Length: 217
Image 1 (cartoon, helix red, strand yellow):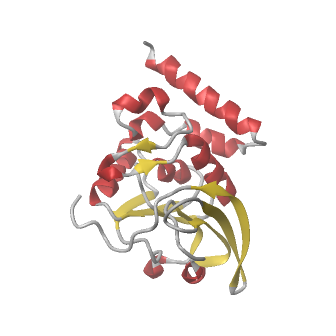
Image 2 (cartoon, rainbow, N blue to C red):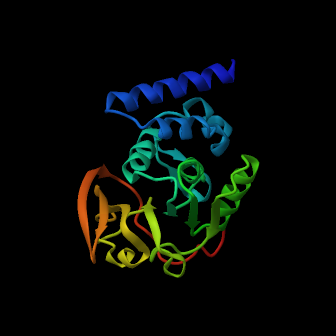
């Protein structure tokens, strides 16, 4: 099988699905196209790399389907000067895509293995403006703000108001909000003065945010 053709077909299908849901910014398409998704997945998932399924990765974690990742990154409306914080590195794929749209991205994960693997993948792709590290992201990264955009791939049980202080004026947070079990609301929170304006952009089922670092892994 020609994996290059296979991958191009998968990417073409992904684009068709995105366009079926509305206009897709050209810069976003270019960022996805420039970031080889297979390099962030185990070989036996390469054939379905561009599917909208959640796929397992190391440490018992999973990464979201390509369509959801694209929808969230599009909703962040990243500008070239932006500093971005990502809570939940996963495979490092979304940070690699965001690195092509933003000035700088800091991505944190509670698992050392995931942060180290993401670092290696960034290095292999020559990405120098994405910084991956093991850290407890449940409270954001208060010492390093303000950020222009914050994205969380794990659910908060209530509105994460503490992130307001870590955002620049007009900054955006996208995070799932809701109970551990069942569906959560994916909320887009825009900082206006000392409060958030909230827009709900969909329903998701993601793991709850865990406070603390993983002791092993």
